[in-house]
Image 1: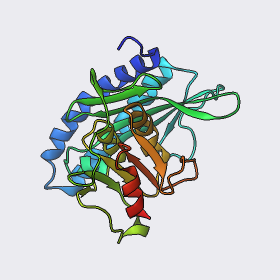
Image 2: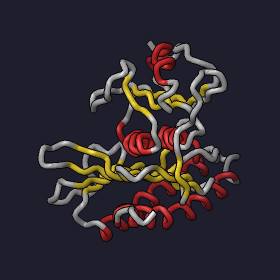
Image 3: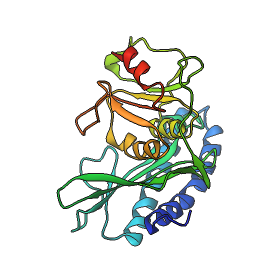
Image 4: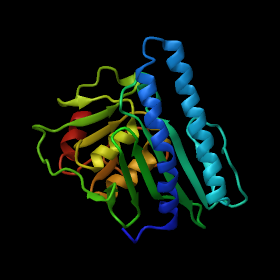
Length: 256
């Protein structure tokens, strides 16, 4: 565990400052389910507070790093140095939180741009504040949850496999294997795929903010990621398959 960078230490410190309050937010929302308006107002407040805390913390901890939030059209915080940028979803699975369903997370990826203008995810962290699970990875160090090393599952047949799906409105009638779960929180689906709880995650209409951190986690956990044509994904590819590698080809066959 001592091989991790100061950036990881900072990211974990940030998340530890956020997740306890989000846990209490969840408990409060359990008591607000009889009033949709009150629950919505409280959820929006929680998201705004979390976003503000992230900005304040990272501006002080890494003043030369850019910050970009999901659904923002431009950088939330821009510096003169383009080398590093945080890609963050303060609360992924926000609708789950609104309904007091314990399947949401803080999602953070740190991307480094080299001299050739090539971008690479060098750090990822996905935190589930309700289960008290912090999934994290840096390139070349392996993937972890809390202080435990994680690896993808070893199931090599479609029998008894469990997969997560991020659907698209364009693919309402897709026929897939059994045991599909739609959780509306892609980063956490990918974290659980890296930990071997899911055997695969199938994603339509990918948003990079949802998959940057999980991509690194799954690779460091020994998994595989391609597009639906079994090619290395690029920025323009919207349909992705993450898996343990052993059932990858059989899932691609069903998808195609």
